[in-house]
Image 1 (cartoon, one colour):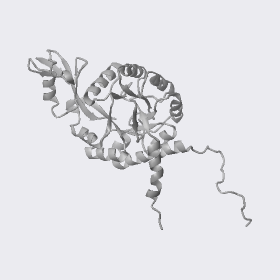
Image 2: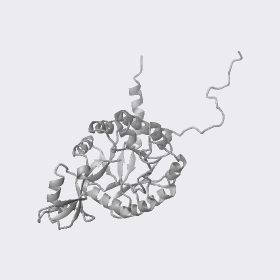
Image 3: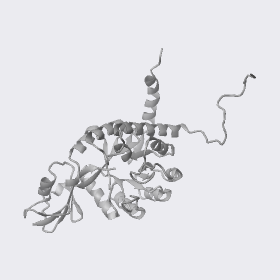
Image 4: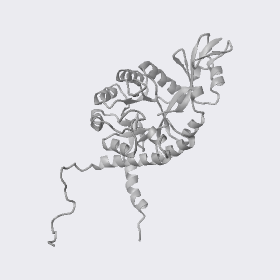
Length: 66
Length: 273
């Protein structure tokens, strides 16, 4: 399926979940948050949340900030 | 015999630290210095600065994963044992800020947030209308909101009225190092609200931090002044001492300003020579 991840088009497997996406994009981080179409996907539901064609996803991780 | 000044001073310092805690959002801290990590040149400088500053509350941000720091920044902060205060830096609307706060709650596992809603990229000044809207929503969702705001006593009162845990007026624009441009407003704001007031943004050097505390602020939040200093660790220590010095001076009560001199040495008994 075609989705948008952090503003860029991406191709994901048909049955991909949010957990799969996080493992692929943010494997080195243990504090990650995901937004899907403008809503937070709680960590507890990453494994059950299947992505759908056209989803807009933001995968976020910590950085320095004031 | 020469006295050991450190030992002599220790009881007074210990008494002050034990008897003058900073409480915000139901949590109590001994340090009144909040440190931002933005602009830090290296992880080594970050760790040295955090430790030298004595801070117990450190701001962090969320960004797209490819642009974010590696996990090691978090490892440093975890090792230092500080509490995290995620920010909503870069948000222009209440909607963006509320969503960012929710994402930060997921990522960092804290409902504390430094709420920042800016009006434009040039001044980074808060957008008062969006800020108040976001603050109200986040408080109703159970967040502990520390609101970065203009040095406006009326807006500060509105933010406190909607339930913000702290009001954080700027001294001057973020990263400008221009110090406290309107000290009178900061003092008025301190009088206007019951919640803690944290001077946030604009601190350039140690005297600015001391001034904030002398004006009655409960704490100081700064980032660039330390992270962009030539020697961040040393500046972090300077800020710690400035905040402590300013706080002590506020508690001690400064002398009134006078137009003319007042001799501290008595004229009584002055010899005729």
